Length: 350
Image (tube, rainbow, N blue to C red; front, side, top):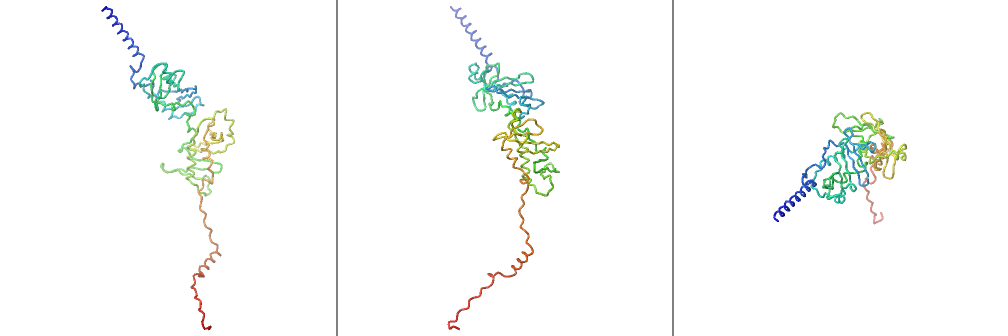
């Protein structure tokens, strides 16, 4: 009997050991520090990122010649700061503590292969450096995440709004801007502005009219126009198949920008809908979208708006008017003469 009891105890210990070993090998939180990087890749190694949404919408970012582009959006440049910020944030994610590790939990937290909020694939050249699923949000600026090939679900510091799946959200909105330092001249239909060269580097830039007609330019208004051009922001790109519907060859506004490198950039604007305009720049094949408010601001500038309004001078008096004024000044006014008292009547009748 005693031998049976000892054998049973040994069997129980073996079973407990097997259970413990299984738990250790199947749970990362028992063997992995919460400070372990969630993705085993460095920021400078990342050469591509694919972001897939829950409705199969997708955006691809690719690093080419050191700059981020949108290869499926006509190879247009992406917002460099936005792209690098996201990559830096992804590689800085920590493993954290495992909150669940079952397939049922993966569906509940929306981090499964069939149900997810975002699916991210991080590329290192031609290899996949990271494959993760992003799901529900347990707290502000936090989301549940799961690495493909693992059942462990963790909470990481990330937000869904940082993982846009619309390529327009990643597009470089300054694509048609000319930097202030490169701006040398502006030419509208009825005026041309030339930027004066300054001797001192820190001196404020000034403008003058190209025509030497003696008119006074309001340099403040000219500066406002320059700022409107250098700050021009696009919102999206127009598919070439849709461009034929826009009468860009008959623009509502057209002007030319001259750069310090003797490059002439022609801008043409045509209305796209009630709230937006299409814009074409001479060095770009594609049409882009800008807000109606931006175009209305640019349309208000003309020659009259750029000129300083001079106060009207009073007309010079004629010779005859000057003589009459002198004579009037020489004769005292009637009201200025002393009053003569009335003579009292004689009571005797004399």
